Image 1 (cartoon, rainbow over the protein chains, first blue to last red):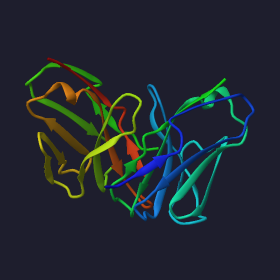
Image 2 (cartoon, chains in turn red, orange):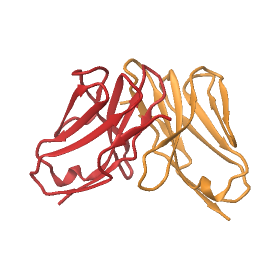
Image 3 (tube, rainbow over the protein chains, first blue to last red):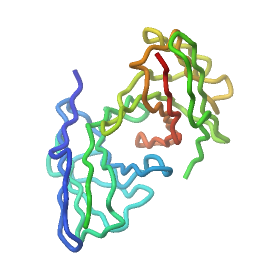
Image 4 (cartoon, rainbow over the protein chains, first blue to last red):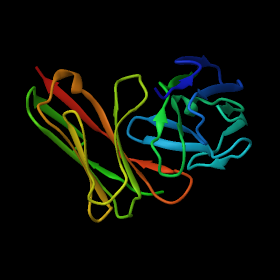
Amino acid sequence: DVKVTQSSRYLVKRTGEKVFLECVQDMDHENMFWYRQDPGLGLRLIYFSYDVKMKEKGDIPEGYSVSREKKERFSLILESASTNQTSMYLCASSQGSGEKLFFGSGTQLSVL
Amino acid sequence: GQQLNQSPQSMFIQEGEDVSMNCTSSSIFNTWLWYKQDPGEGPVLLIALYKAGELTSNGRLTAQFGITRKDSFLNISASIPSDVGIYFCAGQVGNFNKFYFGSGTKLNVKP
């Protein structure tokens, strides 16, 4: 079975902290994605990566950066967390263009 | 970004009833995916559609890729309480597997 694992289910951080969200997939997928999900706004793409060390901005990259040093791992970094970054963060992966997108269980981040 | 209109926003039905929801867009999509999401969990893939006109089933669920490639439908037959959740459509256009998501249909099933 396909598995996308996000390191934390719940995180509470303070404003200004640097936050790392980790995601690992075990399917040797090329593409990995970070979305955030907010009530009334649906899922919005933050960043995606189609290869190791490659990254592309999504629709809302401001305030975030990403790292993909190994094929199976894609990290989302909040350089200086702010309260408006309180959200559910979802990692996903897929094999190729137009292929099925598989999600992790999500990380609910609260920034106080 | 692309606009995906999903309807209805929510549904309240009796156990055993059939359910229908759909997503429409002004853009042409190459792939449609349907997901179910339980509270506090990530979306789980239900059905994937790759060709215009394609009709695919997964148990009591059936989804169709619209002929115009601008819409997709999901039907659930004989609903049961565990069908409760939020159902999302996602459409892919262009390269790099970038998907756009509908706003979700919240399904409530009364036993």
